Length: 248
Image (cartoon, rainbow, N blue to C red; front, top):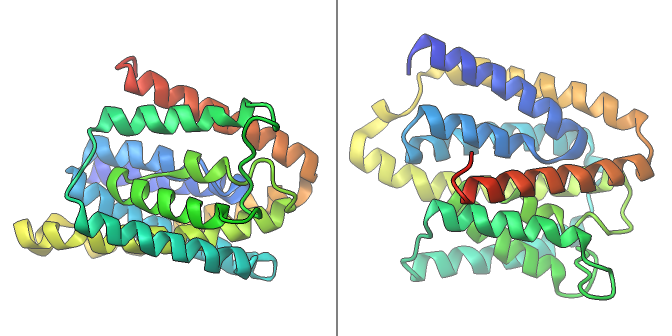
């Protein structure tokens, strides 16, 4: 990794941690795009997972009193099932298919509530979210838009949404690190990973961005938060569809 690449990635870590600190989403998707452009895919997956574990873990710590542990336990059951399926089924979708799926699922936030109501608090939906998000996150690197649609219409307040999403993402990225690090180490050894000093700088930058984003979150109302969250999910979904079409 060159010094220029490292600098670009570190700045991106700070900016994306700030974005995720506000909404608990979007930052990881942007970071994955930058990493994929500068690093081999497997290495990008591991680096992304490591940075996101720190970012989400610190965000979960900051808002720990708002975490809905009941939702997390149900989510974890689904995530375990999703990971076991990945171990059994040797299938890896093409990148375009992943982008198309993410884009289409993001647009579900605009469906009338009577047609399809995805709500992490409803029976069976936390498990469904865990299964789908873990599988997609492990294969495609990010699954934020898919996870977000389970929270957009929920009755949880903004702090509970950010806190609970953060702890679920810690689990998702830990699994991704294990899944991708083994083939990287087998193929190229430790030399395939960025130097230690990169992570020494990335950790505090991620924590700083998360802290600053959290301060802005405190000043928002639940209504403004959910409205902004819905439009942000839509914008990300549109970008994914453009990516699937080869226009980005």
